[in-house]
Image 1 (tube, helix red, strand yellow):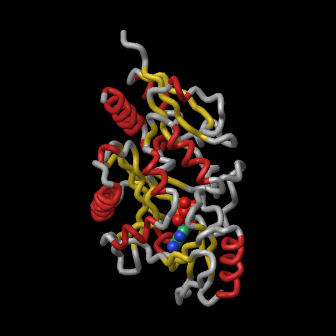
Image 2 (image 1 turned 90 degrees about the vertical axis):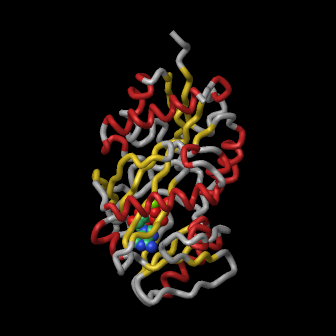
Image 3 (image 1 turned 45 degrees about the vertical axis):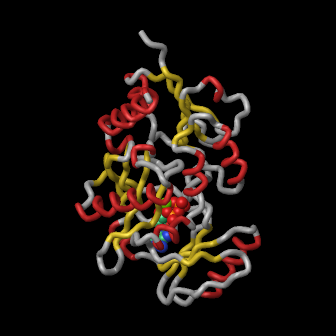
Length: 293
Ligand SMILES: Nc1ncnc2c1ncn2[C@@H]1O[C@H](COP(=O)(O)OP(=O)(O)O)[C@@H](O)[C@H]1O
Ligand SMILES: [Mg+2]
């Protein structure tokens, strides 16, 4: 029998075994002939050199030391998704690029330190352009410019660029639909409830606790997610199958038309445990194909 391929799933020190999303992936990878184990990305003793593949899965503590994280990504010989994808995708300014490329996105004003936004007229959100797990994202009532200025000043004082967006009421009504693609093919979806409605932090302090459930999205939502995949891979100059995984978070605007809230190509929760064994088997098959190369 062939030697098993060595696959490392990268997590962070506070959640060294991820958030449970991969529990059904590990047996599927074993079935596919891979010996998979977790590592902590900034652990200098992690056996990267012996690995055939390292997969970014739960590296959720990078947002305050993004450059260090990206340098680590660049140092890993076989990383998925690859380091240039992580560099592009860990700063939500990519939303403006995708919008310029013609993809419908939640209207986004990028507000670097030293600049002042045009405040949206209705309810709105101020959040860091580099961030994950809803940390630093805050929702403001229409006209609460004083509160928003204070939050913005705090982000700017830390040297962080902010994004200002109108609050999408569809998130309260229907949540956001996360469409998951594996090796470029649509696999499954799940719905995440609203995060900026006073929900508490997870015990790890790395993300706001999420309410998620499996879902079968409407055809126009999946069709939109397909277009988002095309737009992103075209900007990145990659083939779709070069992205081992992708998650496209979709909301509907007030006119009902799907648009992009977030495109997660770095370390998204993929809802594998919600989707069931078939999705984990598809992920493992994509890994096996990649390693057969
Ligand atoms: N413009 C918005 N309208 C409605 N909800 C939003 C908006 N921006 C962010 N949110 C809420 O905040 C959460 C976190 O924001 P998001 O942009 O997804 O960043 P991240 O998940 O990387 O922290 C979302 O899941 C959503 O519930
Ligand atoms: Mg999100």
